[in-house]
Length: 205
Ligand SMILES: [Fe+2]
Ligand SMILES: [Fe+2]
Image (cartoon, rainbow, N blue to C red):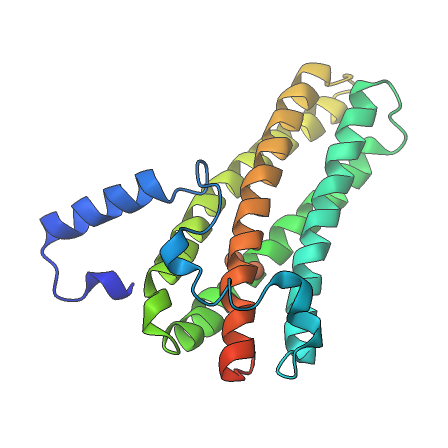
């Protein structure tokens, strides 16, 4: 991360604590004002009309939409199971959650290795935004593990012929928590990355 250069361990520790307390994905309500320099210049409603908006950016936004939709589906299915309308709950939960975990993990890897280093270098004013997005990915890794664990608890109970109501109730809380954190991350990430694409004509390659 850019803030690490030339800092003592103690100073780094203080900054990371400040970052995690102030800009944590669990408590943040949006991007801080000083990181909205480009987001305010390029309102979301106007992105697609801008000449620098390109196909790869549209594809990247569609991936975000797909993550939201798959998560909504498994939340809806868990709620339906708790309401007694199971259908094919077990197989669908396993299939869609497995897909979601794999795809989101791969998506984060591409952003960490390609997009974030490439875009961070384009506007020094937004360096801290990439520290926040990087911290989000680490936090989401932890929440992804919880999602996997709670999904597996439901699946093993179902495989043993149980109704898994308690397990599904706990899973629903984890799924809904994940949705809140993921929505926050995706919204803020989009409001950092897309305005950089528009301002600098950057390619997402
Ligand atoms: Fe991300
Ligand atoms: Fe993303």
